[in-house]
Length: 194
Ligand code: F6R
Ligand code: ZN
Image (cartoon, rainbow, N blue to C red):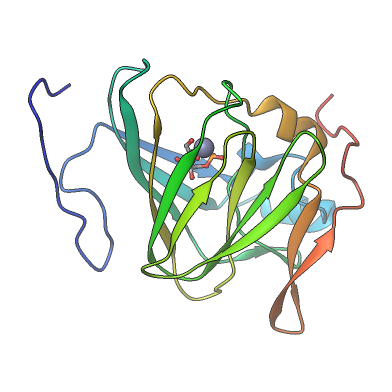
């Protein structure tokens, strides 16, 4: 881990950081219970495709540090739902996060434990502030291009994946006649993994 200030490049077309410490790959198998169409999910599990990747610069997970890196959601669908990240609350719920979209076209789906929800559009040059308390999931609404975002959040934030794994998000993003549509998740709150 670097002990002096540093800089790095995010170059087109892939925007992979010129230096990084971790490369995380998430396949379909990591998303059990999150996609509505269970049959489509099972059929695709033979190939277990790579859905998204994260490149991280490693920093101490303490207050005062900023964790940062690149998230790449590959294009595709499971049933009629667009490829997406697992999504999470931060373990320290009162933690915000900044996303800056570098490439592609996406939605950030967000919700609070109190039942509010929001969807913001991501496109190159767009900055998104995820407020403290808001769970967040990126969805790639293009079927051709990667959705690539730069993210930065406080070092002590931590991640709570379990809540989303158990209850899902209130809203799903589906392909409706070639257009992305925001629909209610009929299985919201119903545990698939328990
Ligand atoms: C970190 C953050 C992003 C995501 C990344 C992958 O707090 O929000 O770096 O971690 O987009 O998504 P998840 O972590 O939900 O698998
Ligand atoms: Zn986050």
